[in-house]
Image 1 (cartoon, one colour):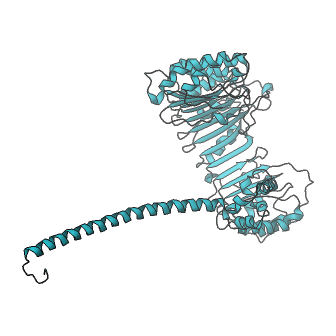
Image 2 (cartoon, helix red, strand yellow):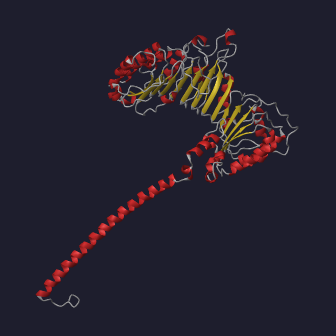
Image 3 (spheres, rainbow, N blue to C red):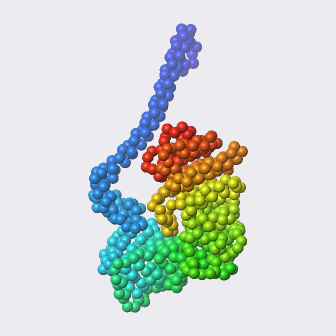
Length: 573
């Protein structure tokens, strides 16, 4: 009827109205069902994503490594070779021998073959070693490898067998980014590398002296004249030399591109003239580690030097040989070097003194006045600073923006004296955020600087390395097991906290974190002193002060039920 456009009678109009209403109702039902289906489809998609993630996790649980029995894993662990400067993840060769599955996984992982430690104990092993080294680095792909070669017998540029060995493996190691050599006399080996081989991508070179129990092998006659003399590549920027090697000797001095170096570590003692020469010949040096002899007989003998890019400087100041028999006074090498050589970009300084050299031993009568240390943010003073404490104090006065300070000295009174200094003069280090104080018996084995003591007690400083917030100050310290020393230190700590946590101090300059190694826990009959110490610090937790208490003396749990510790944010053992 609608198609014919004819007028409808009343009964027909009623039927049409009912039909129209039924159609609308059916349409609404269909649309409702479609909406429900869309919602269900969305839920199903979410379920699919969850199930796929679960399947991936289960696939990881069924990987070949996870299905290896624990006893086999233990055998594989014990089969890993143990050599200097090698970690477990740097020895995939032994893992290839566990099973065929392990071997397939190892051979397909190019990152596992980028580093190699290789020891050749006999010249007769050169041929077999060449094959193994070439095969090893084939599996590393195109990434620059790292090669550590240990040869416990003397080599030099006249050895024909070593020449043939290096020629056979040079294509495999020529792209090395890091190269380390450990031989009895590295100074005889480096000129050989310099004359014959060009490491275009070399970035770091480590030279280590090792002892040998074998007789020197006779050298071959003559040298291969077909080899072309080459130089280091432009990427070479790091040189690390062991303390047994005289890096500035005539056989070494001309073989390195000093102007390219950004990182330099020299363990052999050098004098002030050599130190000045190094700074002048290394204009790009940013990180330097040196062992410097504090010997300057005449004032003004060493001229000052301006180094614009040096950022990190680590110094081991050693006592000059024959000092006790010399009538003239010597220069205080540790802080004086910062006075002699201006470095406006200097951010971190580490000074370790082997002897206690004070102002009475200094060649100048007046106190040191340091300038240009506004950028210094980290200062580490270790060793013997009892007579030299006034020198350290004058150095601290120049570090106006210092945020990190570590201090260890040989005398029990030095730590309390530093705390008293910081308490009495709050303007001395206004932006200090981390203070690390070690005990007189402190022995830091990871420094590599030979700092040690006569005590058997050691305190691990790893627990003291707490990250400080950018908007607050933090303090970490440890002290020894002498009761009188510990009692004195705790009193000064409380005084320092009371001064540095006043409500009128801005939060950015307020002491925020304390980490302590409490020696009094083991030397008193009760925990009375410890409770008094914690109770005195407890009110300052409301200002944001956090305490990290580390008991490095007795091997027992701390008193977690102590009422003060419940209000502290952290108690760490």
